[in-house]
Image (cartoon, rainbow, N blue to C red; front, side):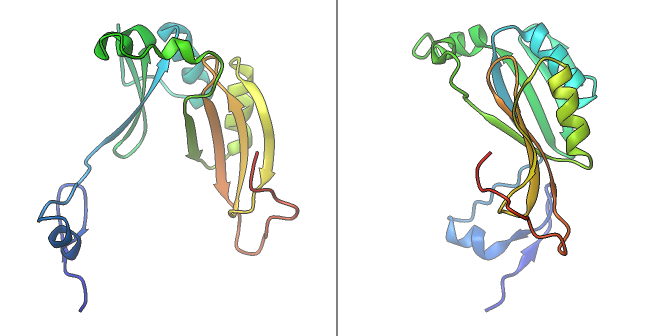
Length: 166
């Protein structure tokens, strides 16, 4: 039996999936990914330069950058999430351990990667063809989050000597 398709505010959804999960389908209109940062202002400045974009929201406690249709990168001070969690977990205690990776498919990953390094990021891996069919450059932001800029390799360009890890 073919799946029926229904439209909605977030696009088309397969109705058989809705039936499988009790009639509920999550139609995401916007996805916010929030990084917990030590210094909101410093992190906002870093991402302003690395993304070559101005924040769409910049208030005490949250800075947001629109990354595309319905996708937002947020920066929240660690003390804000610690307060929300009522002290149960303190993100600052993670130290230099990366807590997140922001992986972005862009037109010119080398240029974005260079901007991230110029903005104060630390290079983890230069632009390299990877086994999964993309070339990716990895850096780390001042808070230790991994930032990857990637683009799909052309079908005729298999990843020569590419690797599955940075």
